[in-house]
Image 1 (cartoon, rainbow, N blue to C red):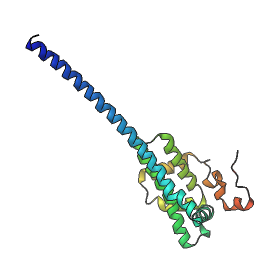
Image 2 (image 1 turned 135 degrees about the vertical axis):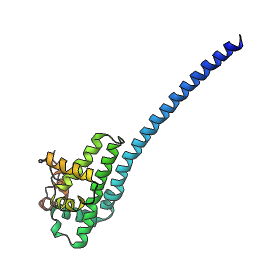
Image 3 (image 1 turned 90 degrees about the vertical axis):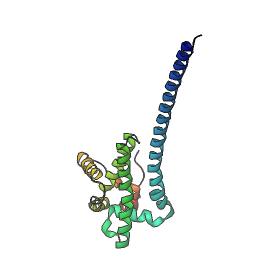
Image 4 (image 1 turned 180 degrees about the vertical axis):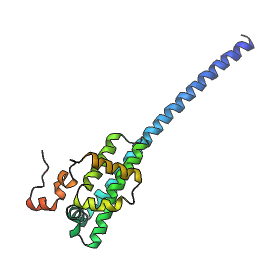
Length: 181
Protein backbone atom coordinates (compact mmCIF):
# COMPACT_ATOMS: atom_id res chain seq x y z
CA UNK A 1 0.00 0.00 0.00
CA UNK A 2 1.37 3.34 -1.02
CA UNK A 3 1.50 6.51 1.01
CA UNK A 4 -1.27 7.99 -1.19
CA UNK A 5 -3.52 4.98 -0.39
CA UNK A 6 -2.93 5.43 3.33
CA UNK A 7 -3.70 9.15 3.03
CA UNK A 8 -6.97 8.36 1.23
CA UNK A 9 -7.96 5.85 3.92
CA UNK A 10 -7.09 8.39 6.63
CA UNK A 11 -9.14 11.05 4.89
CA UNK A 12 -12.10 8.67 4.58
CA UNK A 13 -11.91 7.70 8.28
CA UNK A 14 -11.67 11.33 9.37
CA UNK A 15 -14.71 12.17 7.19
CA UNK A 16 -16.71 9.44 8.93
CA UNK A 17 -15.57 10.76 12.31
CA UNK A 18 -16.72 14.28 11.41
CA UNK A 19 -20.14 13.00 10.29
CA UNK A 20 -20.42 10.94 13.48
CA UNK A 21 -19.53 13.97 15.58
CA UNK A 22 -22.15 16.10 13.81
CA UNK A 23 -24.80 13.45 14.42
CA UNK A 24 -23.82 13.29 18.09
CA UNK A 25 -24.00 17.09 18.46
CA UNK A 26 -27.41 17.12 16.75
CA UNK A 27 -28.75 14.49 19.12
CA UNK A 28 -27.38 16.42 22.10
CA UNK A 29 -29.16 19.58 20.90
CA UNK A 30 -32.45 17.71 20.55
CA UNK A 31 -32.09 16.31 24.03
CA UNK A 32 -31.23 19.73 25.42
CA UNK A 33 -34.33 21.27 23.77
CA UNK A 34 -36.56 18.55 25.23
CA UNK A 35 -35.10 19.11 28.67
CA UNK A 36 -35.65 22.89 28.36
CA UNK A 37 -39.30 22.38 27.34
CA UNK A 38 -39.80 20.02 30.24
CA UNK A 39 -38.21 22.44 32.72
CA UNK A 40 -40.33 25.32 31.40
CA UNK A 41 -43.53 23.38 31.79
CA UNK A 42 -42.49 22.23 35.25
CA UNK A 43 -41.83 25.85 36.28
CA UNK A 44 -45.41 26.77 35.35
CA UNK A 45 -46.83 23.99 37.46
CA UNK A 46 -44.44 24.62 40.35
CA UNK A 47 -45.38 28.28 40.42
CA UNK A 48 -49.08 27.49 40.54
CA UNK A 49 -48.62 24.86 43.21
CA UNK A 50 -46.22 26.80 45.41
CA UNK A 51 -47.67 30.29 45.21
CA UNK A 52 -51.38 29.65 44.88
CA UNK A 53 -52.54 26.14 45.61
CA UNK A 54 -50.14 25.82 48.54
CA UNK A 55 -51.40 29.01 50.16
CA UNK A 56 -54.98 27.86 49.80
CA UNK A 57 -54.10 24.65 51.56
CA UNK A 58 -52.05 26.21 54.35
CA UNK A 59 -54.00 29.41 55.04
CA UNK A 60 -57.76 29.05 55.35
CA UNK A 61 -58.20 32.81 54.99
CA UNK A 62 -56.73 32.58 51.46
CA UNK A 63 -59.65 30.49 50.17
CA UNK A 64 -62.18 32.72 51.88
CA UNK A 65 -60.71 35.90 50.42
CA UNK A 66 -60.53 34.30 46.98
CA UNK A 67 -64.14 33.07 47.06
CA UNK A 68 -65.53 36.29 48.50
CA UNK A 69 -63.44 38.41 46.14
CA UNK A 70 -64.49 36.48 43.04
CA UNK A 71 -68.19 36.89 43.79
CA UNK A 72 -68.38 40.21 45.59
CA UNK A 73 -65.18 42.25 45.77
CA UNK A 74 -66.98 45.19 47.39
CA UNK A 75 -67.63 43.01 50.45
CA UNK A 76 -63.88 42.71 51.14
CA UNK A 77 -62.05 45.00 53.55
CA UNK A 78 -59.29 47.15 52.05
CA UNK A 79 -56.62 44.73 53.32
CA UNK A 80 -58.51 41.75 51.87
CA UNK A 81 -58.92 43.57 48.55
CA UNK A 82 -55.16 44.02 48.33
CA UNK A 83 -54.63 40.33 49.09
CA UNK A 84 -57.25 39.44 46.50
CA UNK A 85 -55.42 41.63 44.00
CA UNK A 86 -52.25 39.58 44.56
CA UNK A 87 -54.13 36.27 44.36
CA UNK A 88 -55.62 37.19 40.98
CA UNK A 89 -52.26 38.57 39.86
CA UNK A 90 -50.55 35.24 40.49
CA UNK A 91 -53.01 33.61 38.12
CA UNK A 92 -52.67 36.30 35.45
CA UNK A 93 -48.88 36.34 35.61
CA UNK A 94 -48.90 32.55 35.33
CA UNK A 95 -50.91 32.86 32.11
CA UNK A 96 -48.55 35.57 30.88
CA UNK A 97 -45.57 33.30 31.61
CA UNK A 98 -47.31 30.51 29.70
CA UNK A 99 -47.74 32.85 26.74
CA UNK A 100 -44.03 33.67 26.70
CA UNK A 101 -43.12 29.98 26.89
CA UNK A 102 -45.55 29.19 24.08
CA UNK A 103 -44.00 31.86 21.87
CA UNK A 104 -40.60 30.29 22.52
CA UNK A 105 -42.13 26.90 21.62
CA UNK A 106 -41.21 25.56 25.05
CA UNK A 107 -44.72 24.38 25.95
CA UNK A 108 -47.47 22.87 23.81
CA UNK A 109 -50.36 25.05 22.63
CA UNK A 110 -52.84 22.98 24.67
CA UNK A 111 -51.18 23.97 27.95
CA UNK A 112 -51.18 27.61 26.98
CA UNK A 113 -54.83 27.47 25.95
CA UNK A 114 -55.63 25.97 29.33
CA UNK A 115 -53.86 28.85 31.10
CA UNK A 116 -55.44 31.59 29.01
CA UNK A 117 -58.87 29.96 29.39
CA UNK A 118 -58.39 29.87 33.15
CA UNK A 119 -57.27 33.52 33.26
CA UNK A 120 -60.26 34.53 31.12
CA UNK A 121 -62.66 32.62 33.38
CA UNK A 122 -61.28 34.55 36.37
CA UNK A 123 -61.75 37.87 34.56
CA UNK A 124 -65.36 36.89 33.83
CA UNK A 125 -66.19 36.97 37.57
CA UNK A 126 -67.20 40.25 39.24
CA UNK A 127 -63.99 40.36 41.29
CA UNK A 128 -61.75 39.19 38.47
CA UNK A 129 -63.20 41.86 36.18
CA UNK A 130 -62.50 44.54 38.78
CA UNK A 131 -58.91 43.37 39.29
CA UNK A 132 -58.37 43.09 35.52
CA UNK A 133 -58.99 46.85 35.27
CA UNK A 134 -55.82 47.31 37.34
CA UNK A 135 -53.77 44.49 35.84
CA UNK A 136 -54.33 45.68 32.27
CA UNK A 137 -51.99 48.53 33.19
CA UNK A 138 -49.18 46.30 34.46
CA UNK A 139 -49.12 43.06 32.42
CA UNK A 140 -47.25 42.95 29.12
CA UNK A 141 -49.16 44.51 26.24
CA UNK A 142 -49.15 41.34 24.08
CA UNK A 143 -50.71 39.34 26.91
CA UNK A 144 -53.24 42.08 27.71
CA UNK A 145 -54.26 42.32 24.06
CA UNK A 146 -54.49 38.56 23.66
CA UNK A 147 -56.59 38.07 26.79
CA UNK A 148 -58.93 40.89 25.81
CA UNK A 149 -59.29 39.41 22.32
CA UNK A 150 -59.89 35.96 23.83
CA UNK A 151 -62.65 37.38 26.02
CA UNK A 152 -64.17 39.21 23.05
CA UNK A 153 -64.00 36.12 20.81
CA UNK A 154 -65.57 33.88 23.49
CA UNK A 155 -68.58 35.79 24.85
CA UNK A 156 -70.17 32.58 26.13
CA UNK A 157 -67.14 31.62 28.20
CA UNK A 158 -68.19 30.52 31.67
CA UNK A 159 -66.77 32.36 34.64
CA UNK A 160 -64.57 30.64 37.18
CA UNK A 161 -67.50 30.65 39.62
CA UNK A 162 -69.61 28.75 37.09
CA UNK A 163 -66.83 26.28 36.37
CA UNK A 164 -65.90 25.78 40.03
CA UNK A 165 -69.02 26.63 42.07
CA UNK A 166 -67.16 25.59 45.21
CA UNK A 167 -65.85 29.17 45.30
CA UNK A 168 -69.25 30.83 44.79
CA UNK A 169 -70.42 31.82 48.29
CA UNK A 170 -74.06 32.03 47.19
CA UNK A 171 -74.05 28.47 45.85
CA UNK A 172 -72.04 27.19 48.78
CA UNK A 173 -74.68 28.59 51.14
CA UNK A 174 -77.35 26.75 49.12
CA UNK A 175 -75.37 23.51 49.23
CA UNK A 176 -75.10 23.31 45.42
CA UNK A 177 -71.34 23.17 44.98
CA UNK A 178 -71.02 19.66 43.57
CA UNK A 179 -69.41 19.24 40.15
CA UNK A 180 -71.71 18.68 37.20
CA UNK A 181 -71.52 15.29 35.51
